[in-house]
Every structure is written in structure tokens, then in C-alpha cells.
Amino acid sequence: MCGVRHSGITVVGIPARNEATTVASVARAADEGLRQAFPNRTNVIVLADNGSTDGTADRFLDADLHAHQIVVRSTAAGTGKGTNVFAIADKARELGADRVLLLDADVRSTEPQWIERLATAVDDDSPVLALPTYRRNRFEANTTNHLASPLLAAIFGVHVQQPIGGEFAFNAAFLERMTRWPRPASAYLYGIDIWLTANALREHLRVAEVPLGRKVHNSPFPKILHLPQQVLDSLFHVVSQLDRVRPAFRAAPVKREAVDGEFVRQDPDVIARVTTTTNHYLKAYQPDIQRLLPSARILGPAPWGLWVGADDWPHLLADAVEALADGCFEAARDHLVALYVNRVLTFWDEIDGLSGPEIDELLDRQAADTVRAVKYRSITFDHQCNTGGFDAGLWAALDEHAA
Ligand SMILES: O=c1ccn([C@@H]2O[C@H](COP(=O)(O)OP(=O)(O)O)[C@@H](O)[C@H]2O)c(=O)[nH]1
Ligand SMILES: O=C(O)[C@@H](COP(=O)(O)O)O[C@H]1O[C@H](CO)[C@@H](O)[C@H](O)[C@H]1O
Image (spheres, rainbow, N blue to C red):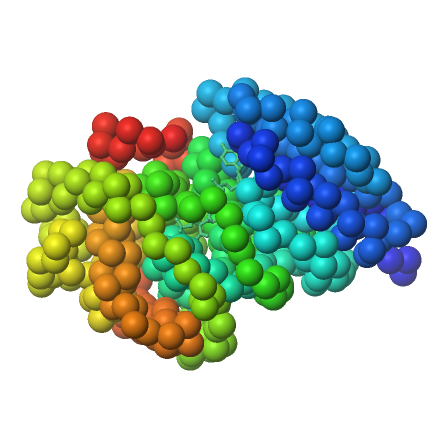
């Protein structure tokens, strides 16, 4: 039987909003990587821009590249990163691309070598998703470390170190599969990354982890309220399609080396604003938080709000999965965001003085403990959740940056 037809076309997609200062350097690194990996093929770099006001598209088009350059634009209102990723996927399908790579537009450590490494990982006729593993600032990747990675391990039975890293690759077969998956509104926002990974795990597709080196980008911390809410929203929509939690594929995660020796602490003014918002929320909703997430009842005080330690967190995550299974989608999502912020601030206190490997070990242990905490609850998902618009819910009024 003849194999799948290959066009020889590679698309590198760059989703961007207001990234004028870095988009050209990312595009040049991608272009050099494409030239090295696919010298005599058709290479296309697509910038998908949802309403930038800083000249991002002009900076991209001004870059003198070997690859074909395409700009796909959408308006700002009601759009997000997912809008751009879906636009890149549509363009890649239109072009008949063999593979699609996604690069964030703000990553100052992007290297040409990332292109061949990501592309090689998806060189297959069956659907494959490539995910990055990089070394990162220990005060970043909080959504990855305390929500996405442990929850995916506990629910899908597969431990993925960095499921929402931003640098992805997938092949034509995966591109076709993703057209079939339901798209909650949050997947058009920051929920897109976990939507890709969680759906791949849900359909038992191959997921390849690709070492990329260091990730240096704009600090995500100012988005620590609305970004994880959108990530959890998309994750919960995918999880609600399961009938039950799946057994762990392997007891312990593959040993990680994801914490960079160098680090930069987060802005204390931003931390103060975020903790004020979360403490308002905790005070207003404490009875329901403790009803829905019983493990919260034993949490003690901390300077920032609550002490949520590495021993507490797996049980709170298990409570949230159980609450989701019981149909309390929005409350579980929003209560978890408030407790997640307290987990992050507690984690920063826990890692004071620890080495990178010791921090990696703590996070691996937390993920393995989450798998165990969820496993012993025998959770089944009997409630189909609504796939209506993304409602920032209780957080909208509290988080002036909610988007
Ligand atoms: O409405 C948006 C928000 C973000 N992004 C892009 O998505 C990538 C990741 O966003 P961001 O850096 O804000 O996320 P972080 O890495 O800080 O979590 C970047 O290229 C952004 O420009 C986008 O295309 N549209
Ligand atoms: O790296 C991460 O864990 C998150 C956010 O960083 P934080 O956890 O807020 O420090 O950033 C990633 O997640 C976003 C949502 O999925 C993606 O859109 C970003 O591309 C990615 O950098």
C-alpha cells in the first residue's frame, strides 16, 4: 500500500500579540533552523496576530527570511493565543503541510536547532505531538508545575513534564485529528496548549518530549490568575469527555532536569496585588471552598494567605478532580485558582536554599503523590459539562487583567 503523500512543506507558526521587540529574532531563528533542517523544501513561517498595536506584524515582515512569510490577522476583542494557533493550523491544512511547529514570539532563548529537534520528533505517518522540556527559572512555570503536569499525570496516567510549554510540533495526521475535537471558548485563549496535550492523551496519541535547552521569556507571573483559570477550564472540558480516571502508566515520573541554575524572583508589587485579590476571594468563598475541597479545612495561615505545602497540594488537586466529576465545574476551577496561588507562594518558601535537582525532585514527588491521591478515590465522570462561552466567572470582577 502506498504511504501517505508528503508535500515537503513545513509550517512554523508564531502566535503573537504585541511582541514587536522579540518576534523578528524568533522568526530569524526559525528561518535558520528551517534552512538547516529542510534546505531544499518549501518552508513557511506564519505569524498569527490577534490585534497587536505595537507593530508586531511589521517587525516580522521586515525580517529578511529565506522562508515564505505569511501574516494571518484577527481582531483583539474576544480572541487569544488559541485564536492564533487555530489560524496557524487552518493555514497549514490549506497548504497541505507535512508538519507544524509552534514557537512563542517572546522567547529570547529560541535556537535554530529547536526546529530540527521538534520536526524529527513528529516524523511519522500516525498522529504525534511533540512537547518541549527546557530548563526554566524556578519562579516560573508555576501553572506547569502545580496544575498541568500533576493533573494530567493523575487523570490520564501519563506523566508529561512540560505539557503547556508553548513550543510544540505536530504532523499532518495530528493536524487532521485536532479538527474533530470540541473547542471550548477557553481553548481560543490560554487554554490552547493544554487542550492540545490533554486531547492527545485522551485519544492515546503518541506524545514525544523534546529537550530544547533554556526558556527565557517575559515573566508569565502577572497572568497568574486568568491564565491558569483558562488552562483549567480547557483541561476540565477535555477531562469531562472521559468516563473515568485512567491508571498511571508508570509509578514514578521520568526523572526531570527542568530547573535552571539561574533564576529571577517575581516582582513584589505584582505579588502583593495578586495576593490581595486571592485573599478577597478566599474570604468571600471560604465556606464553599471548604465544602467542595475538604482538604482545605486543615490549611494553616501564611504571610501571603494560606500555607499550601507539597504534602497538602495533591489532596486539594484530588478534591478538585472529584468536584469536577460531581458536576461542580466552575466552582472547582475558580476555587482551585485561589488555592493554586497560595501553593505557588508556599512553594517559593519551600525551595528557598534548595538546588535545581532538589527542586526537580520535590516537583516529581508532588506529581507522583497527586497520582496516588486521585487513584484512591476511584473517580468516574458522569456529568457532561457545558461547552458554552468561557465565563471568567467569579474572578472577572476581582482580576482586572482577566482576559
Ligand atoms: O492574545 C494572545 C496572548 C498571547 N499570545 C501569544 O502566545 C504566546 C504565549 O503567550 P505569553 O508569553 O503571554 O504566555 P506565557 O509564556 O507568559 O505564559 C506569545 O507568543 C504571545 O504573544 C497571542 O498570540 N495572543
Ligand atoms: O510555562 C508555563 O507554565 C505557563 C505559564 O507560566 P506560569 O506557570 O504562569 O509561570 O506558560 C505557558 O503556558 C501558557 C498557557 O498554556 C502558554 O500559552 C505559554 O506559551 C507557555 O509559556
